[in-house]
Image 1 (tube, rainbow, N blue to C red):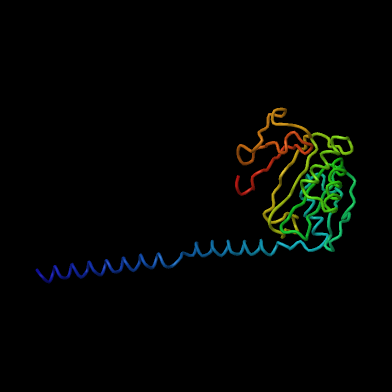
Image 2 (cartoon, rainbow, N blue to C red; image 1 turned 30 degrees about the vertical axis):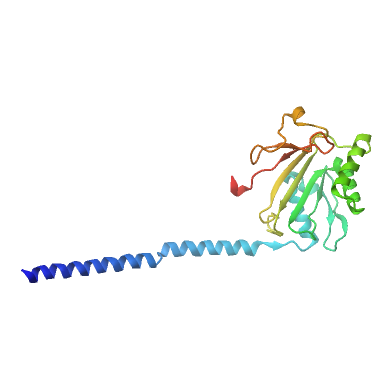
Length: 230
């Protein structure tokens, strides 16, 4: 009887050990499917990295800047801005209502803008004052006075499209800058929260609000959420 009991106990120990070994093996060794998935993900990531190019030519500046403009208007936009040599020039002539300001290659990150040509005197005045060494507050005050006198004008509803991000690599096939996104500014000179019904601070992400209310630079801010946040 003792021999029979001993045999059962020994058999149980062997079964337990085998089960334990199988469990350890299944945990430590990834399945073929998991390995294939990881490899595919890694290859896809490498493919994306290979597609990206650093913005280092005037052609790159033009291509990426145009992403700030509405897609249907990009072919006719005039493109201005600093070239790779550091000169402020017309990078490309245009024939429609939009002017695109290319990213400044000498600044960190990426920032391009597109605006209606009627805004060019206002924008050019700001650039000229900045070149003279005026501070942001001084530029604001000077243009405020010139708007009040009628020397400068902004048509209410004129829109500024801003395409910005922290990186300076892009996909040459699509011209999209890595991780960049759009923001919109709708100019409404002298408007206030009371006259528009818009809050002075955004109530939540992705909500419009009014900035610089009651001044010449009063404008509606619209900052869409990044695509991966939707």
